[in-house]
Image (cartoon, rainbow, N blue to C red; front, side):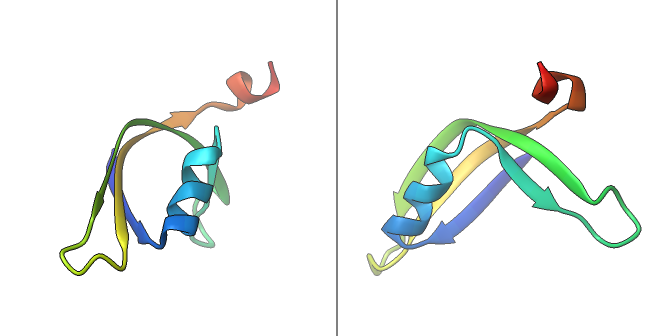
Length: 67
C-alpha cells in the first residue's frame, strides 16, 4: 500500500527513524497493525514549510514480530 505523510522536518524524521510503524484501526477492525516502510521518498511542498514522505507500507505479521 502506498501512503503519504505530511509534516515538519522533525515529524518526518521521527517516522523515518522507526523500523516498524503501528497503525491503530477502527473499533470493529483489527485494533493495531504493524507496518514497515519501503521505497521512501521525501519532498518539500512548494512553500517550503512542510515535507511529504511517500512510502510503501508492508504489513508485518505477528510471527515476524515475535522472532
